Image 1: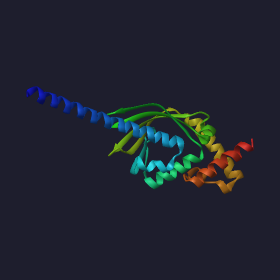
Image 2: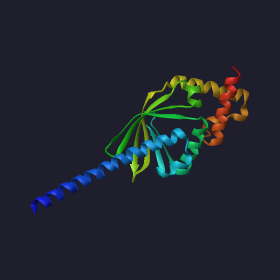
Image 3: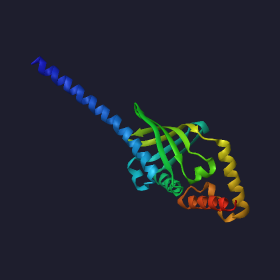
Image 4: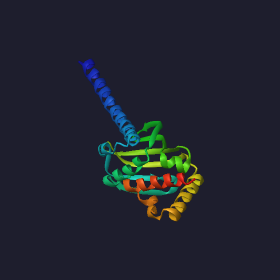
Length: 190
């Protein structure tokens, strides 16, 4: 009888351990799906992964912004205009968070930065939904090249195509189209 009780205790412990590891896999899988959605610009699928609001934070630049789900969906539409490619270089779960190293390139970044931007991010969850995405480090980002090229573009557009002025701050799909148009006009004049 004691052996049966001991065996049942071991099975219960083993079962509980499996459940805990399933939760860990779930968070890691959620994070992987998030980056896949970004890579595919699959805007309709994002609703299932995020909480009602999403806090984004950039540690190096002491910046944070909270998006409603609707606002983040609008940002994804803006992002999709540039045909982004997200590549997860490294990803792991540590307790209740997921850490990832991600490379991103798109038409805007290629024009402004000339190479992919690589960032380290921490993803935090609330009830198996993403609640916070924190960019903790820019592994590859040449701020001076990016800003120099952005300023050249903005100044040229102000002088030659004032109808597109303000494209830099309009992070909607329409704003993204204006941004892309500004890049194409600038490149064609050279």
